[in-house]
Length: 194
Image 1: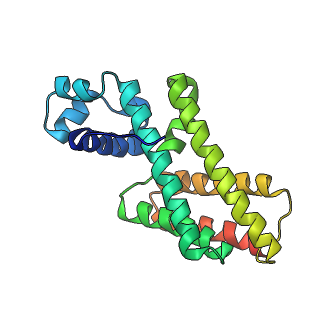
Image 2 (image 1 turned 135 degrees about the horizontal axis):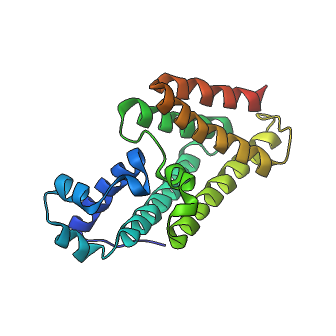
Image 3 (image 1 turned 90 degrees about the horizontal axis):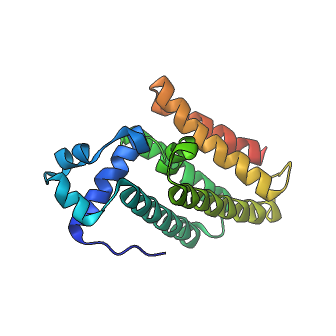
């Protein structure tokens, strides 16, 4: 799944990721990117012939980076499932607080699913499937260690937790209150441990 890009293409993709985070698929154009990267639209088209190509690349990179980040959490906190989920939630709390990523780009794109190219929608689905599988594995391990009390299957609880995290992002954005995300996320964690 690894996406190899030139340094300039990486710069374009990173700016596109930021624009996706704030406005979704239809919330930016190559003209917006041109202003940010300080190159002409034709140069952007050289790296990414279409917007669909660009966004697909951004989502693939996001998915890959997310898997790497989750694997890193497991390496560092592998014996403590609660610490892993807390670190995951705290990562997003920090991104929302410092403005580096107020929304997960896959959450933004999922909201636009009916209106985005099918190959992008498929990659977004893959992201959520990966995340659900990771959370479910963490929950299963935590339940076996009596850290978590699951009311449903680990898979169902993973979907609830994931939905709460992404819904918390929306709430923080709607209220203009980054701290509300942290409250929501920690309430979700408390629900699993109560």
